[in-house]
Length: 369
Image (tube, rainbow, N blue to C red; front, side):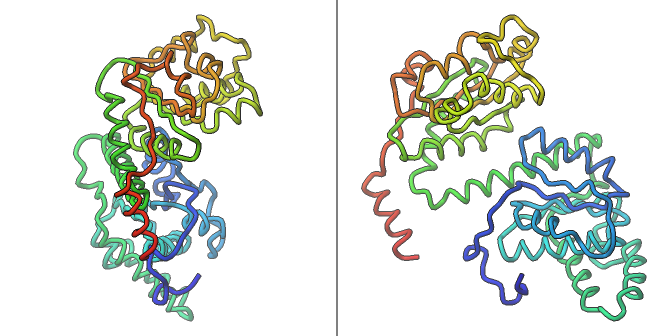
C-alpha cells in the first residue's frame, strides 16, 4: 500500500467493504471482558463485526488482519493498559489510521482502564512500553516513530473514556454499541447521496410503516424490474433494524425458492429471527410449537425481496406464523396483485421513475464530476 503522504482522497479510492466493524484490542486485557461484551452487543444489532480470537505470535501482523481492517467501514480501538506493549496492536492501529486517511474509514477510540493523555503522550504504562520498544527496535526507529504518531493521532479522535461512564458496565457497552450503529447509519445515508430521489422515498416508506404503532404492519413496495425496489428496502432495513428485537432480510425470494425450495427459505428466516442455527422444520405448518410461541413474543423486522408467488408469502409470513407486537414486514415485488391480501391499499408504495428535475440532477451529478 502506498504511503499516506501520496495517497488519493477518500472519494477517489474504492475499497470493497466486507465488515461493518473491526475490533482492535489487547487480548490479555479485555478479550474475555469488555471486548467480548461489546462484540456480543454489536452482533445483537446485526452489525457484521470482525474479531480475532487467535493469540499473537511473533512480531509480524497476520495479512488477513490487515485485509479485514481495509474491508471494514469502522474500526473500534480499545486502548487498555498493555495495548502499547503489543506490536500487533500498534501495527493494527497504524493501518487503521492509514485506512481512515485513504478510504474515509470511521475510527472510534475507547480508553478502557487507561488515561487518554497517557495514550496521546505515551506516558504511564505506554511510556514504559515504548522504552522497551525503543531498545528492541533501535535499528528501526522509523517504525517506533510511526507507532507513536498513530497513538497520538488516535487519542485526538473523539471517543469514549470508560473512567467517565455513568451507570453499569452493561450501560457503557450499550452506549458504545448504539454510537457505532448511529455512525454506520449515517455513513450508509451518506453513501446514498448519489442515488437521486431516494431519500424522500425512504422517508415515505418509513411513514407507511408507522414505526411507533404497537400493531403488526405489512408494507408492500412494487414497481418494474430494476427500478430500485431492493435498494429502497435495504436502506429502510438498515436504518430501522436497531429498533427491533430481531430482523431478517431475505433477498431474491423468487430465485432462492426455485433453487432451494420454500421450506428451506422459511428455515433460513426462522433461524435468523430466533438466533437458532440448527432449527429445522420440514412440515408445511409450524403448528402449535414452541417456535410459534417464541415468534409471537418477538418484535421483528422482515424484508422479503422479489416475491413473485402468493405461496411464498403464505409459507413465510402467512396466517400460520404470528409475530410479536410492533413487528413490521416489507415485501418487494413486480406484481401488485400479490400484495392485496397482505397489505392494506394505503400501505402499498409504488416506486416511480425519476421526475424530470431528478433526471436532470442525475445528469449533472455524473456529467460534471
